Length: 279
Image (cartoon, rainbow, N blue to C red):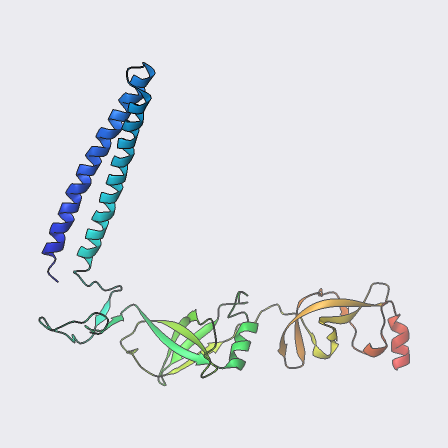
């Protein structure tokens, strides 16, 4: 677009703004003098109100001129097409003189030359694994997740940069995006395989899964108190590793978990007598 008409309009708006600013300064000075004169009873209060109205009107005119200048500058910006990112241009699809329709005509394509992205989908089972591992959601991961894109010849390390907020109702899959460092080998629309390596805590508390009992909506385990009696410890469980269950809250490393004769246990039961009967 020819920017000259829009540049001229912007200059007109700048001049109007300068004029409005001068009027506002003059009206403010008149009102200030009127304040001094009314104290000496040199002018009436009605005259003071008139001066104040003139000042407020001049302030409003200046604000209007500022808004009109901003509109003119915005219209001037629309005469140029600026790329939102730096990158590599594809084929120029329209030449000078071609008809361009807003929202329909594609000029070219631009690819980010700093970053590459791999979109991939996961099913419900994989989604739950990532959530429980702390990779998705508000739970921080135990360790930085390892992720890479594999094109069949080499691996390109990356990190998760986007997770969708809902499942696709058509495919029942969840969309994620892997951010990679740009490379000439990672051309657009390439197909590969994304691998995520789930982080594992170095300090997990694991107990046999069979020790975890359920009471209504609560989970608990039987532990031995200092006096040798059975006590309940309410716990919050985590992931399952084979036959071992991760305990997130409720137990201390020094606690002794009771596994045998759990059906016969009651709070305060002497554990030695239970063990003797079980034998």
